[in-house]
Amino acid sequence: MATYAIGDVQGCYKQLQELLNAIQYSPNQDLLWFVGDIVNRGPDSLQTLRFIRSLGDRAITVLGNHDLHLLALANGRGVSNKKDTLQDILHAPDRDELLDWLLHRPLMHYEKHLDVCMVHAGIHPEWTTDEALIYSGEVEAALQGEKSHEFFHHMYGDKPHKWSDLHAGWDRLRFITNVFTRMRYIDKNTHELALKDKSAPGHQPDNILPWFLLGNRKTANTKVIFGHWSTLPDPKLKNIYPLDTGCLWGGKLTALEINADMKNVIQLDCPQAQPIDYNHGHKNKKAARKAT
Image (cartoon, rainbow, N blue to C red; front, side, top):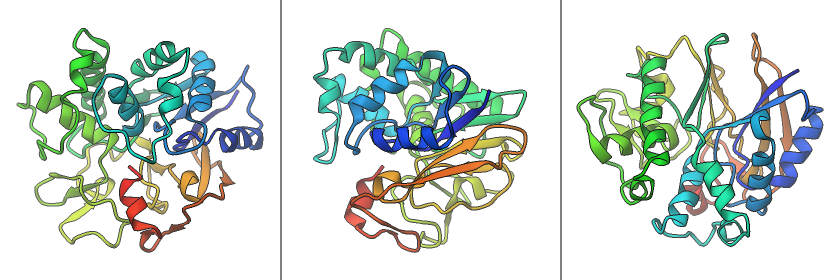
């Protein structure tokens, strides 16, 4: 039996199937982890969602910002983008079953025996693994509780910028959601989220750093698998495993085998309309700003 974590699929069903063939995936024996953003912008969001849901307990999926965007639209919140590929899901005969399944996905998955966790965007440097699990659980409870519909009317926004355990209510849930599903950069002095900057590392303002480069990060000894950042070259850092290699934008779709050494990486070339320039982000910078 093997376990593989797979980067942002974003509705690229054909490429996902090709990658599964490349890793010789056995649905009866192997386990798949998905780093979130399983839908949107790609051509086959509905087929992708149906397939991953059909895997049952053979797949573990965390929520990404595009997945939450779909749920928000279904709840009458948010604005559909012209690049969205979500209408097939919203009008599908099995819409309610698919959305209910998605609503019950976590923001964080953790395997204690390997000390490996999976999130979509990252973990705040001030949080321990145990704290991050607690905070993800708070959002999951809100998503799955009686006020689920109301959650999506408060989810959008960049504030508060800085973490405090004194945050309460929707501000607290919004901050936690932003960390797990939107974060890339953090101010190196104040630890405030810098959600506006989506550039590739090396082109950001001097005062911000990728979240995983912050000093004294409390999850530094935990292996962290994440996606979300398609213009992030693999930093080759200990315990950091970025898997969004930009399939949607003409990059690759990546699978990482989850085991003791975490070294087996399988990648599939994905020719698409938007090639990636790893020195300057996406060549189509307007598209890149919206590829979140």
